[in-house]
Image 1 (cartoon, one colour):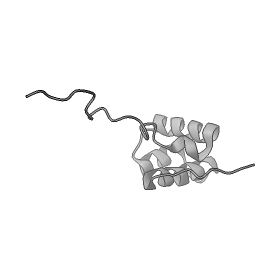
Image 2 (cartoon, rainbow, N blue to C red):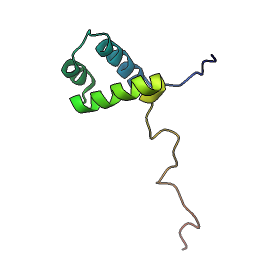
Image 3 (cartoon, helix red, strand yellow):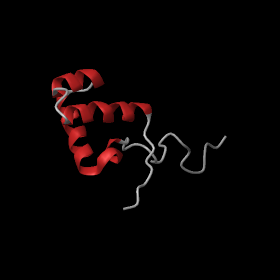
Image 4 (cartoon, rainbow, N blue to C red):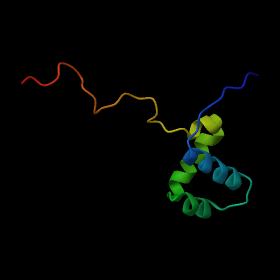
Length: 78
């Protein structure tokens, strides 16, 4: 099977490490949420995405989208 390289930010790599420790029973979900500064519910969501999509599931969903602050057309007339 061909492996694709996925780019993860430092934050996403840290999340991956903490979630792996959670999966292996080394951390509780409460401890994982404190370590990541997230709610227990958000940790549960991230864990579900990790199990479903692998490490790529931890990438920010906002990455690669269009910028809403950019110009959308004709600009300002003056």
